[in-house]
Figure 1: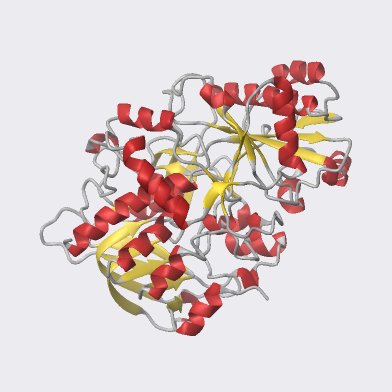
Figure 2: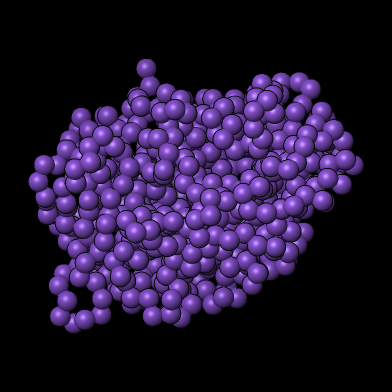
Length: 533
């Protein structure tokens, strides 16, 4: 029987509160209140609690564990993802996969781990972020790699990833093995639905239990509504976080309210949630930068039907990648892209693939022989790539406005052509770029000509993303961002931002390790300041 560290911790007496069970309003006090329990919040919680600070963690989603992970899409998406894995940009043109549970996206991601590329850090230095160097960050990356068992995947790739490698070799582009944050992985392939064996070293089974063992309190099913008492007035009251208990969809009554007073607030609700909380709180924004320059790595997909079974739903989801089309272009030139494979479980692929009726049904019948390549576009480095902007709906919920422009679509076209060439070189019987007007092409020359003529426009071109970055960018000067290089808010000293919203551009790689390393550095500095050590 697999041990469940969450249930074991609850049995030991962890201080955990399910906000949906609260009948009356509640007041709590802490040294530090952390909003969000994903890559940023989880790392910060462990470091701050270990320093002896009284920490309260606030999580919008539920507390689930390996005992609840049954490898079923019908359970995982509604329970563990924002908007049941159907969060979209304002115009519905990009589908965004984000976690919404204790552990955040680290609970449901595919374990792919990369240090921040040197080219990205050099670009940040040109933006004035002099501390963002390989030399300064490497020790923190190394520390988190050791903490979370991050190492190159040494097991043979599944056929989906192996086809990516074979196709790349055939057209002369290099690939490499991916690093994954796993220990004792069973190589099942259902990482996106929560790891049922606890092999994935997510925040759910590493830093969050460590913080709770050190005396932290976890409040879950609780929406951080707004911060009060913030601002620059000398006579303002002590800052508080107002938290609203979530209710089940069957219960329309308002939940209890929790007010948390703290010496310091760490915002780690992700690059949509953190800007939204500051917007709801009417935080100072003298240069109108809050929520702007939010990036996604807009991702396009190419599906291929192979002659033999691929079974891309089985085995480590991602283990091979190529950065050739990132490294072969200047970071601030035409948009580059990273190539990866992707798992294709029935629900997520059926809602992503183009086409309807008999055409769509035929594609689904060929699921076992389908191979998928992704191209993640590196946004935010060129003036024509400003990213998006986090806005608030009338009810205060966030939405990301991310227009897709000609600069992005130029990269999309090149990526479609690269992926098709690679898949045919790997032996594909037919290749289908995921676009409403595309057909299943049976040769590389046919695909090349057709892709060159495709009308690339929002909604017809299927675009997805699992990487949300920016919106509260670090900057050397207040006019250029929301926080300084220590993560402290430029105008609000009692607030730090410690998550992916810190990034002034996208990463150009799966961002979880970039968040782990940078937050470990900044949270350690914050713990020293708050404990006066």
